[in-house]
Image (cartoon, rainbow, N blue to C red; front, top):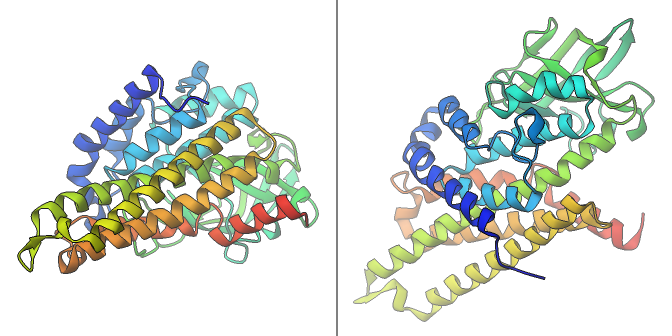
Length: 379
């Protein structure tokens, strides 16, 4: 058990930190206020290898490990939590094609995804199936060399902007075994989008319904075999949960660091905030909880990468802890700033709005508890 990062890990952590500081942080407020999808910044991130972090290198990926990705996303989230989270989703969708697609599919889709010339979305949730993902209704019917899709997906990050939609669709009977995975490309007849959702946070990434009306997709776009879709979706979410947990830790660490600086400068009742023991204890607790969440997340990342037994349980534990602790630390940092923390002139309110959804997506934290307890106690 060695807790020291390798020289390579320290190098790309520094690279991600510098990118977040120079290319993301100066623009994050504007992206948030104008709901700007920062295409140029995303492609600059991809040029550093962040468009296909754990995609194999024969198609342009960086071929890094899950732990490496967690380290990178924590740093990127300190620049702009919302944008880092979109990069996470893009990576999850790209990995699913890399891990479960055939060679022709990998060579057709992944080079442009790794450079972010093309953007990707992950389409599982539907208007009537959120936590109960296995009840999804979007239907794909085989017709010759195509599948004809009818249905809708909800809350899709990148909806209306992405070039590639990795979709879970029903090709068989009800339940998880009737679900398959297929790639739908932008511009396919019958593919359309709802209006952009007006969200509390995550404003630097577009979010919309993705709709299929007699949408004819080549059968060659089926990832894996019919019936593999739910297994593929859940495997993707194990990694997605790690990444979104890392984004929560990164956003919270950013706010904690700023709060420590603020407390050293701000005076009330003739003393610095940093001199009040009650407030010092809050900082100690937030720092302790973030460190514990980080260590669990890194442990889970190693388990997912090695396909250890219990990796899904560890990923669920890590996601639940990191996103809960992350939100509480950001909320506490805002409180310690008093009225200033509530102003848009300070970034903490933006991070608060961005990390709140991390307790909902990639499986709600209630579902994380279901996964953990089911693994320990059985169905």
